[in-house]
Amino acid sequence: MGNRKLVVSTGNKHKILEIREILEGLNIEVLSKNDIGFEGFDIVEDGETLEDNSIKKAKALSDKTDYIVIADDTGLFVNALNGEPGVYSSRYAGQEGNDKKNCEKLINNLEGIEDRSAYFKTVIALITEDKKILKAEGICKGMIIEEARGDKGFGYDPIFVPEGFDKTFAELGHDVKNKISHRALALIELKNILIKIASGS
Image (cartoon, rainbow, N blue to C red; front, side, top):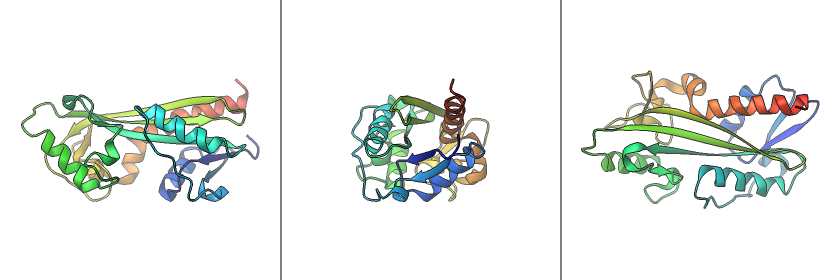
């Protein structure tokens, strides 16, 4: 892909490192929005779906640069709660990013409910240099437990046990999570899209 650059609509250094690892070998430089001078550039995520939010964030940044742009949105969907918290996952308890309160509210809302199945979903929107919009997504199924366990994660990680495991994401740690998670699966799909773009197909 020569010296092509890809800008991620985030300032989160951990997310940038994760994306660089997954996309390694593509000869593409992964940059954060901060790297191109947009530290304070934030978009209100008011879409009705993860797709809406990821495309909105990607479009807003793509309008300001000629590089490839990606943006993502992630939600936790609990089947017995009709998909809650879903697109509102980060502000489920009313306060943006209060992980502890979000987890507590979810556990309370599931009290007495037998079906605790759930899944995480990540949607990544990619906008090419010629402004074509593409999409990648990943899903990780699992269940919600009754009390938090582990301290290696964030968000709902301490109460989510992925299928095939008996530990929460917060107990499994980053190495395992980054192989099986919704975000990792979406990034692998994204890598395949970028390979096709590079080959001109």
